[in-house]
Image (cartoon, rainbow, N blue to C red; front, side):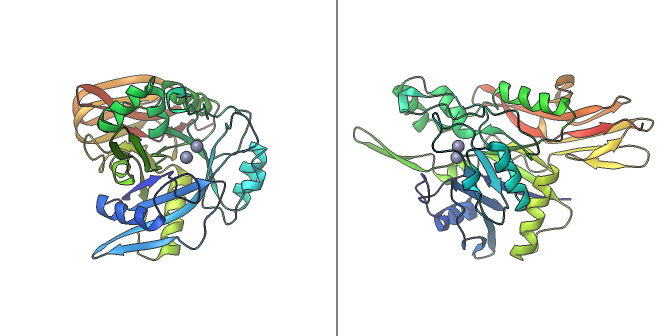
Length: 356
Ligand SMILES: [Zn+2]
Ligand SMILES: [Zn+2]
């Protein structure tokens, strides 16, 4: 498998962001990531997808959209739609119809920032997901950089602190979102976890200070979704778009917080007598299944089964675990950074199914 780094979920002046697609591509090239997915609110911007190049480097820019019902107060239920062949914003008032319309158009659907606390100090409402009676969606945005920030800004002063200390912000996904994910997985559903930046590159002013809060470039070295593809990206945009979408659809992906240290190289696989599985795959139990975890560097790693920690390894880089029980298994990795133990890697699950 080949690993690529995607930064997804961001906005441009087509909705409420401040950088153009070309600026995003340029910053992505500088940050060295492979794919960016721009998702403006309630509009599918066309004609800008493709490879952007600078010297030897290239970045694939894809456009999706983030759809919500603008007549609803508060404006909850934001859905990321990626890869759909048409604009589905007209279905926004009914989340299930929206999900189905996106699917029919070949699109993937992810509930954006499922928990999104209000931040009255900066005039931000709670825009979390509430319509949990839906089905047939692809997955959840388990870690959203902006929602985490909103949860930390209790006063304007907190806001100012984080504008100047952005590296202090991210600690991990909201536990409620991870519980929700595990709950859905425990119902037997396949639910893909992704991480998003929700970048806006908002210019702010405080007295004489002016700053772009969290430029795209900052986000590109933050919370990314890493995908695994069976073939390398070729440079052909149509072909590569399909590879990217397929890996997201199958959950051949993990969420990596690349600021403390690059998460590139993380592996979580399973092997039975006859089968081999990557994260996102199903595997039959047969006699037993052996998991292997490889971390990019030595740190703390936990194997979670059906939402419960099974085993935690401290100061390890390679971990092995053999199971004889069916279940949904995923990996969480933490790392010490700026005085705190922070979330670093969240794998998609491997689904161990019983033979009968
Ligand atoms: Zn949103
Ligand atoms: Zn957004």
